[in-house]
Length: 242
Image 1 (cartoon, rainbow, N blue to C red):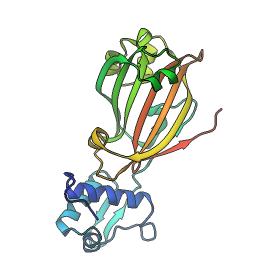
Image 2 (cartoon, rainbow, N blue to C red):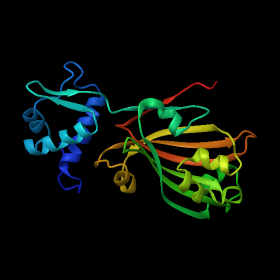
Image 3 (spheres, rainbow, N blue to C red):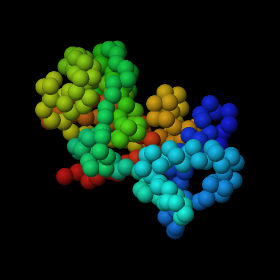
Image 4 (cartoon, helix red, strand yellow):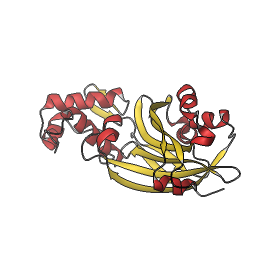
């Protein structure tokens, strides 16, 4: 059932739940969505609300109405994002999306939290640049991330990222032609606050969290990031090192 006092529109909550059901293969036997009356009963809402939710999925290209037949599932809404020694957002999604976009939400220069300083091998009290970013695929928000970079080496990275919309391009401009993933820790939590708002999730939605450290080719840590992925839109797959 949906949460009526959550502050999130009912149609959006239902669209999220239908998208997740499609991802889980709930309707694979027929390849069709249940009739509006069935979905209305399932979620405890009227048919108009279900129709609005279905319209959102049609706009995303997930389902397609066929006159006289019903609503056919066109594709699952789950992108595969590989995590490997050379993890990159644009390369990871490859040809799964036509339009990839990175956006800077906020930036600050501040003392790194103790856990971040430890991950980057820095003394407690070291100044870092923090970036808050949002990545989208085909206009749909996919991940929100918090990144930390040593300020003595990457003091201008906020301005460079805002112009290039790419961490890789920013690194290259600031003297790091290539970098590799040293470690990634993956966990799952319930979305809340700004993550829920920016990723356009309903209450109770799950996000996958990838805490990672990247190094330059000399092995010096250059970035700590904590990326939050909408679990109903992205599957994280860990690939063997090559």
